Image (cartoon, rainbow, N blue to C red; front, side, top):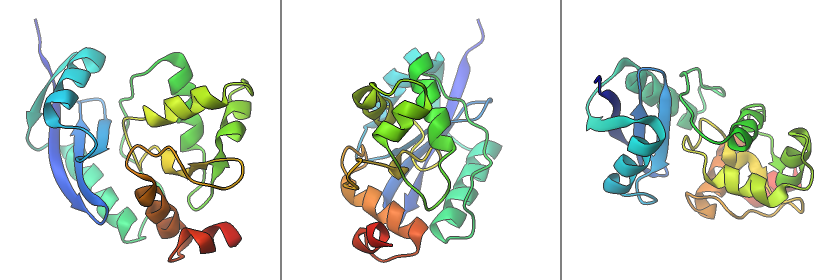
Length: 179
C-alpha cells in the first residue's frame, strides 16, 4: 500500500512561528505553532488526509513560503498556491466563500451564512471558520461580527487585528473600522 505524505516545515512570521504543510495536491496546513502541537497535527492529518507527516522540503512549500513573505511585505494580495482542503460539505462551502472575500475587506458571519444559502447558520459558519486548516491563505481573519467587533479567531484576536490592519494599511483596527 502506498503511503502518502504531508511535508511540513516551520516559518517565522511577523505574527509568530507558523507550521506549513503540503501534500502533492496542494497546501493543506497553515497554522500558528502556538495553537497546535505537532503530535496533534500529525494525528489530525493522518485521519483527514490519510498521510504520514514528515518534515522536509517540497516545491509547494517553497511557493507558500515565498507568497507568505510577500504577503507580509504587502507585495501580493492573492495567493496562488494550490490548496488541498478536506472538510464537510458545509465547511467546504464556507471556505470557498472565504476565498472570495477581497483583500482589505471584511464580511460578517451572517453575510457568509446568507451567501451559502443558509442564513440561519451563523454559528455553524463560525465553527467552520474556526476549523479552517489554512489560515491567512483562506482568509478567515476577514470575517467579523455584524457589529464590527472581532472575536473567534483561532490564532488569537490580536493576530486577526494585525492581519486586518496589514491589509488595510492602517496601524490599528480602530482606524480600519472607521474608514
